Length: 373
Ligand SMILES: Cc1cc2nc3c(=O)[nH]c(=O)nc-3n(C[C@H](O)[C@H](O)[C@H](O)COP(=O)(O)OP(=O)(O)OC[C@H]3O[C@@H](n4cnc5c(N)ncnc54)[C@H](O)[C@@H]3O)c2cc1C
Image 1 (cartoon, protein in one colour):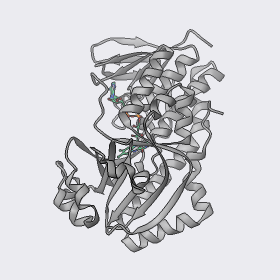
Image 2: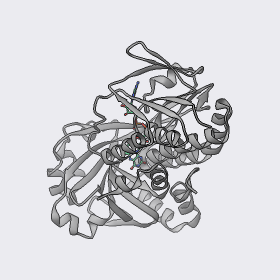
Image 3: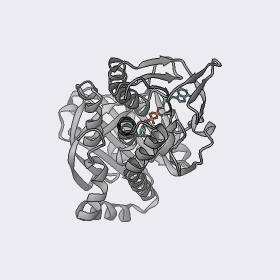
């Protein structure tokens, strides 16, 4: 069905995927992004097979993965660098800078015909299909999508119920240049998560030249979450990473992890998509992939069912179970933060050896998203 129009608030992974997928199905789409240049503070994204499939379906995979590092395995280690668990990925995984994924999606959406308006802030969405902008305009559409992230104001304006749960932990994200020696080392090919008490450091190179590091700590850990990074405090926790910690300079940001749960993802002609609807702790590296899967799934449902509210019901029935599962599992993982080191290592060891637990862990990454079969 052609001739329909969507207004989308938010040019993140969710909004851009939905924009590209809707345009591919004959919709006209305008995306409003409140920032003026869509620039993202240095951070990396693990994108597993399920997310890669969505990127391919919307025409963004080749550009998104160009020069990015394909990873094959992940380890957990203790504060002295001793390996406590080792997992070989069951599916493809690329570690990519967030900027590269967003750029690839934005260009794919534009190629498909979407208009992306930067410096345009949305204030409100209505169930009748109106988007109200900060400049006072009220834009009418067949569908309005609130893809404005975890702090979504559009979700609130729709009067939909939601629950926000702050988790005990959060992370500082930073990107630093990689040395030649690191790029050529065996460790450089792995995602490695070092644990020390409630602090952890994830090392995940995004390319031959960029190393993404996430420093997770409890929100109550003032030194651990301090910016600029308290190198002394992190060196105390990770004696084996002294020289790396010395290099943690530059722009960084702290985010406390939160979980958003909505009993319903839509109302009338308005849908809530991505983190706005189902933000989760980043422990499985699947929050962004869920946002993209649901963005594509939404466009497919609207292609199958002309009536917009009915299509939104179908979309939610089809996509929600996997999103709920992913959210639950990543929350359990966050709970490990407060466990004693030995018990946590035992838990990783058990997960690595239990086929049932492994299947739960890999379920999202192995899923074949709607619209990508
Ligand atoms: C530490 C950390 C690590 C993570 N690692 C991974 C990972 O490895 N893999 C993975 O898949 N996921 C990961 N995630 C999760 C992932 O980042 C999110 O799930 C994903 O970014 C959600 O995309 P989104 O488009 O819904 O929201 P966002 O990325 O938040 O995008 C929302 C967009 O809307 C814009 N906006 C906000 N308000 C308005 C408004 N009123 N009007 C117009 N525009 C507006 C914002 O500027 C932004 O561009 C991680 C998250 C964290 C916190």
